Length: 113
Image 1 (tube, rainbow, N blue to C red):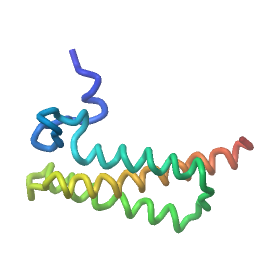
Image 2 (image 1 turned 60 degrees about the vertical axis):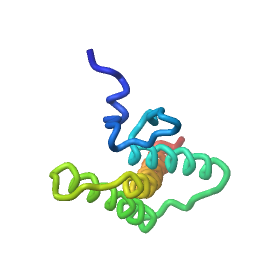
Image 3 (image 1 turned 180 degrees about the horizontal axis):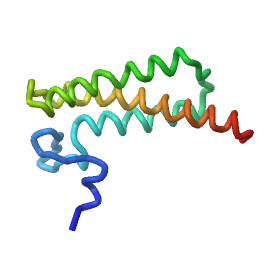
Image 4 (image 1 turned 90 degrees about the vertical axis):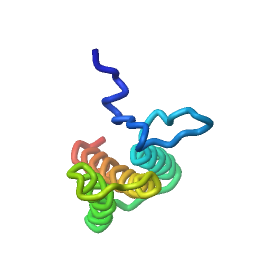
């Protein structure tokens, strides 16, 4: 039987943070993604963001470092560390948050919601 937590993160101990001997529920990169996603959604609740093609381009570029870090590690070209994983996760989470809000913005604009 598959554990549902594997759907949100691989949770490998060597790629996770620990506090007082307790492993974070997600790895370092996912920690960064979830932190910046939540903070971005809170920010956009209080402040207007002008979604434009330029902002979307910047959002995609913010995902690139996480992709490079993850894929070079996956293909064993290099070994990352938790600090780099967290930083690329924070950047990627911000990019993903912007992309999600851009999609929502244009869906609502086109569907009249």
